[in-house]
View 1 (cartoon, rainbow, N blue to C red):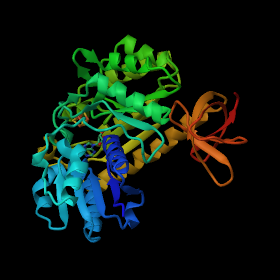
View 2: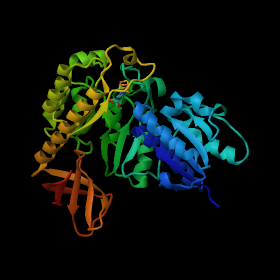
View 3: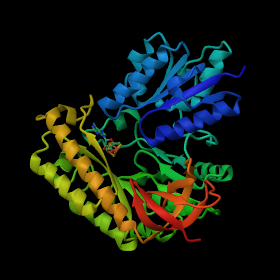
Length: 426
Ligand code: 5AD
Ligand code: SF4
């Protein structure tokens, strides 16, 4: 009987990429993958955890506890496992705690265990990039990891401690990974990492990397997942004139107040942030910026919070992921005085989330009458087909003989709930 494995992935896109790759490896070697982790009776349960906030720890913990009750071979990996390695290793129902460096060896560890040779992570050399190309993913876009780790040490952030220093993946590996994914039939590639604009491999920087990827032949779209505000060159910005490169970036703002940004140890001022937005929008007026914002950072005053509100309106973010500041042990901000009361954090979070919804709706409205190229993903019972346009807005279409994983040029004719409604024009 083939063994069954089930994965639970928490947190960021890097974790998704890593899970996809592991799942493909198990499938290739004859294992069955059960997508329904919650109800799974799989022989092997793998939880790929996150520790970005207390809430992420709590959620990771819940999935671990659930898995432990099932009597399966339980493996815990990811950033929360990295952070609480010792404690988790002492828990009896957890077979292996695998750090980020050895995550890509989980298959070998499981195989060895099932063959009666008990190996631990120390028997394998660590490498954060050696992941095989994913053929079986849990979603329609193909995520490609180009970089890992971060050297910024923003004062609130645990990531540099759990994912380590910045390291870039060799360009040949990246190109091969993307070509494999295009051969598997994927039409959208999403570049991912912790701080990818700092990509640097043997003299090749992020700009050259993107340029080289755009030169790969074939019908595909390239999306850059998340970027830190940086000194982008005009040449980099003009790459977005190429219709293969999606005019959408998740550009992390964190706060709209210069004084808070300083305490966060962010490396830009608000005027620099506005400068970046303007330069992109000069080339593509509808360029969609989405972002992450933290509310309730230590000593955030009402005035500072209001600066974040005005900045968000001024930029007109297509989407804001609102985080309530969460104290992380070992970070500078954890030691700062005047931690903000939970009640204030909750109310600021609600105010910003409401504004975010309003801004998203304004953005959707501004798209009516314009054109997008949708990559179709899912069909509902009534025959409507859904997918995302290049601006990363969800579009609903009704067409005869709908096909998934296909590009269609559409005119946006209206809005329905959170979706744009499109009509095929070619
Ligand atoms: N508290 C709240 N949010 C945080 N983030 C990172 N660290 C913290 C923290 N301590 C958010 C940032 C980052 C996103 C991935 O998580 O907004 O961009
Ligand atoms: Fe964390 Fe800042 Fe690095 Fe992003 S840039 S991972 S927020 S330290």
